[in-house]
Each structure stands twice: as C-alpha cells, then as structure tokens.
Length: 219
Image (cartoon, rainbow, N blue to C red):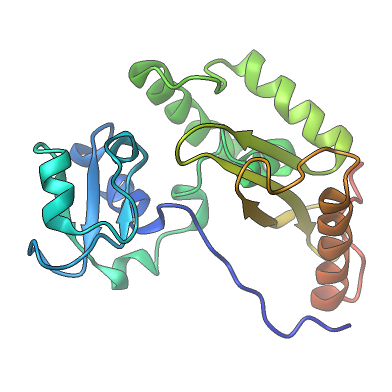
C-alpha cells in the first residue's frame, strides 16, 4: 500500500531548538510559549523542566509557580523550521539518535555526540552513555539488529523503535523512521511485532522514495 502521509513528531522540539540556538538556555529548565504571558500554555518544555511537572500544555503561570527559575521563551517557528534534525535530536539517548550513531556519517555525528555526552556527564543524566566505549556498544547492537529501541521508565518516560532509511544505493542514511509510546504500552523487544513492523515500514518507505528497498541493507 503506497505511503500517502508521513507524520513526524519530535520530542520537546521547539525547546530543543532554542537550547541549540541559545547556549544560555542549555542545562536548565526552560519552556517555549506562543507569547510571554501567564495566561497561555507551554508548547514545549525542555527535559530539565520535566521533573517539575512542566510539559506541553502546562499553563505558563502554573509552570512558573512550580519552577520559579524557569526560563520562558517566545516561540520562533520560522527559526525552528530551518534547524537541521541532527541539531535537535538527542544522539546518544534516543532511538532515532542511536540510528544516526550506528549508520550515519561519523564525521558529522562525532562532534554532536561528544558535546551531548559531556552535557550528560555535567548534569548527571542516568542510564545514558557518557563515553565512546558505552556509545559504541549501543551502536553495535543497533547495527546488528538493523534498528534501535529505547524504554525510559518513570514519570514522563518514553519507549521508541527506530529504523533507518537509506538512499537509493543503500550506502547513506537519509533519516530514521520512529514510533513512540509509553513504556509498557509499546512493545520494544527486538523480536517483537513493533520492531518487525517498523523494519518493514522503513523498507516500504525506501522503496516508495527510491524504487529500492533500502532499510536493513547494512545488516
């Protein structure tokens, strides 16, 4: 069945864009809102804001009460639409990021991954790679499986399965096709039905785009 619509949903996208463009917003709780008033809601919140219960849809006034030092930024959609995906997608602790680490161009991935692991060490992120040896272990598993999976438990946890889509010759990664869900509700086991479905969806999408079944060609 031909693919007619492709929906792309990126976690904390507008907040991640602002943190990428403005270094002072990194490593601190921040949120993006349509306007700088307490009477609207957050359209994105950084990962650092989540422990305070601040998420998409949280009223700005309530967010400020929960986190008095929250940094609020007015949305700049025109800038967000021009930022490359690799600049806002977590490379070392997201399923899509692990696909890029495993199959992407190392010279483009390395600097971003190094900076992200340094940030993880600085803020004490738990259960994420903080060295090249740890990251390479995860990338090796991703290359062997042909896809990446994650499951982060706890409040605001996330589960995901991501499969690579390559160019027509099967030699260069174009993007990662990813499905998200809540831990326990999305089966992320490597031999489970969701992983099989995503691998097939990536192959079908590659065929649709290039007339060539690309995903999985590097296994």
